[in-house]
Image (cartoon, rainbow, N blue to C red; front, side, top):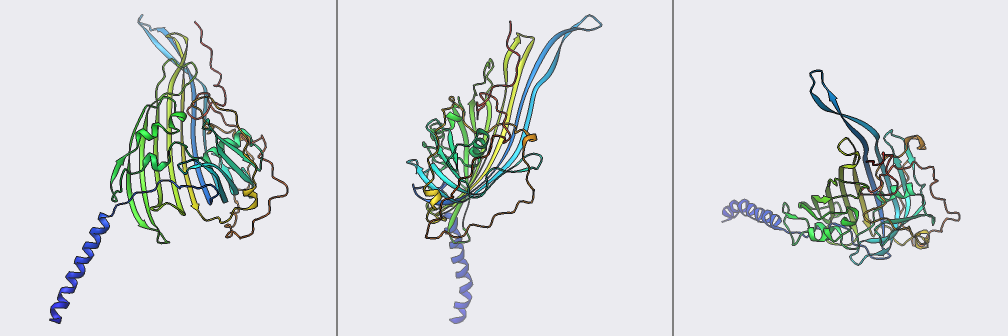
Length: 416
């Protein structure tokens, strides 16, 4: 009998193991795709962003030319009026942050950040410290969709604010990432589902991209596994494309739609609450359009705008303890004048490399923030001023999908 039992054990173990595998394979998850904040909640935060942009304006002239055999043909001459490209990366980390206000859906509406590191590297590998450690950044989503900033209680100049808008995005009052990309029901690993088109068209997307009337894409649950702390986490990836995005370029007589594509990867705890949330996104935008006639049928001006923004955001909710006195007593964020419809404050094009203020490339990484103490830290006695106006400017075409802060480059006016 004992021998039979022994001989049966391996088969029984294999059967139990196979049943366990089947149970794991049959497990279903409702992935979280964004942290859900409450007012007064503290967290730590890191962001890395890379930007690649292009602006090209071309004057194309067509002239009739007679060949030696008497035939004629049209010769086109292209003259580039302006060509700007930029590539830069920026890094930001906050040793502590405080959610001041949140929308009803739990996404950030206003928050304060105590800077640990904030710098930018240009395409010549020059590093610029945008803000020193200890600075207090306030960010608030306005009713026009623009994000307003304050640095140590003062409004930063437009160039710094443009960079901060990439590093510190605020939430959408209409929907969270979970609303836009979330699964309609618990799903097993490997399952896919369509993005929520209806929710996206009611989100901030139509405000950023005027004319968008449809989008298509899918989400896949890539994995579900326990992390080093034993917390079960899911990772999802999504790709989607916006349809019929027509930015309001001035004088556009042939409004070609822009190509707008998104890729998103989110890793988050299965259960909402304290923990680590990682969001990676990449947006590619390209527009090439005819911007007016100088002489109908003979000369025209084309403008091409293209850029990509890659973001990596890392939130750790519940990790900063009680807010420091500097965060708790931060002054309100100044109001900004409203932008034109369809605009936002994100940067598009080239910083002037010659005006960068390089610092040593061997930047000493600040030590990791110590665990928060029960007693609040004292507020700085002398607030540091925001970055001066000598920060390199951004060249931004008026009417582009992301900003209308400056006029178009010099383009010959239309004439009959």
